[in-house]
Length: 250
Image (cartoon, rainbow, N blue to C red):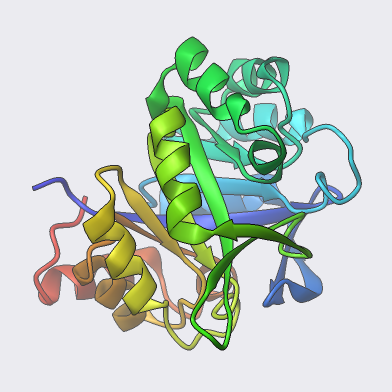
């Protein structure tokens, strides 16, 4: 069995790490380089960086941050936000990123997934999905940092992304994002059963048990932001608890 991963997520806006609730009320947290080094030292398995304003502001990605992070840490990290072309992907990987996350640009141009996978390998291309579960149960894919609705249904879009070459999926459920009330276990479990690529669960981590619960439900990795940023729980505490309840953790 492949060991599960614990992944801190750093949302970047204008060069600073920020955090909100359900993508609203965003507040500044810290410097991304400082946080990255802290998480690497504390035993994070990977890091995820999202430039949450790049798609909204229609600008290029934050390569200066990427290159500085690469010099400071010795664990893999994924970068997303403002990646619209193969050239963007190449620039990001050249700056030191290990994986590329595509979201809004892939919705507008699905062939971007295929092009990236063919050139850099599926292991480099991650389909990040912001999903809003509506009252009728429809899992709607959102774009532009959760601000704009699409007609896409989550399972159908994930299936297409995998067919095009995405090697991993980040499933971020907007309903839970920043609430600290726990992950959407039902949707995450259904994704894990349906698809044969790793699923990174995102949205809702409030404590170590929440992260262990979603890993036990089938997620290959659990992603969190607030609880790590504000030192409400440590990465080691999450790993210790997860092992205690039977998860195989890196």
